[in-house]
Image (cartoon, rainbow, N blue to C red; front, side):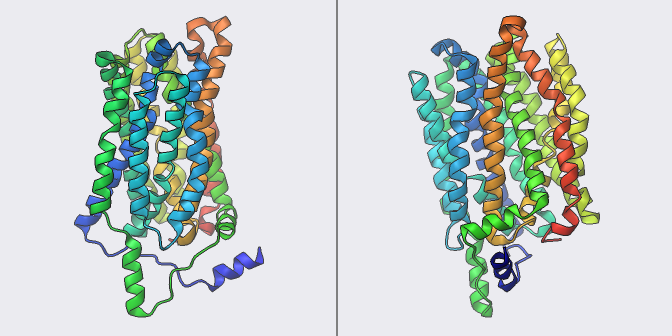
Length: 442
């Protein structure tokens, strides 16, 4: 413990300003990273709208669907995220290259999903998607933090996070329509190809801010940026009580959100007798728009409220989780799918308010050499608990309830999940009490 403290104390002052890029370039870079984020979530989540068609075609159980939509992807995504984050934190590494290679790999494996002929092949292809996507978010968050001023961190990261609901929207709509017209395999084939083109665009048009910092340090004879060992980075990250509590809260949100994302689509197909295309259009557009608004507002309120009092950075997700639970329960219970969509809209917005505040806090709770590692650690738990266990656990519960609930088993599971939405609000509130003392950049 004392050795870690001495390393931190001896390190040169941390940069608190962004790399001096033009406003035009910074806007271009953020938009390009938003597209990457969109493709990341599109290729990850398109399987949700295809799940019922895949189940019928390959004769799978709900538990197997849970494996395909969650654990198969999440295991490799989470465990590979840590070493790739260490690579991204290395001052000699290019985060742009890491993101581009990751994008090309997961896009190619999405195409392979469309060629799979049985459960084992599809499972392995989904593992490949997870391997590719492991390198994206930690490097992207660290890159964004170096490109924009500290007072805009939450808004910039929330802007990147808009790719999550937009990617979900496009995956639901395009995946559903393509499935109705040409079958589920075509959806994987068509939606995986654009990422290969954008990977090339990234390499040739995006700059690495570290080269700017290194040039400035050389001109001014300033000390080189500090580096950390793996053990030191872990010690700094896990030494923050706010980080630990935020990680617990965000992981619980992810567990509920990933499970609901998969199974609420299946609910509309099974219970409301809609086709994948209809569900993709109506549910995809509704949830996608709501989530995009929530992402933007979460970052907006975090930057503005946090400027007055750091404890208020997490105010929006606390209120959002409490507000969304009863409406979401009502939406899952309502017999009319149109009314159900309306009731689900506001909770879908409220439940995405956490992204910008959460990840901007994560970046500001640690020093620059540990930023990608901090993102990787929280993504490790979010995706292992949320993406890995959420869809699978929901599927197992649905199978368990079928003897007594029949085709209403999915509804039972979703209503229970909606009620648990109040739990993360408690942990976000506990975390907020430590922000004034622990935030490194104010």
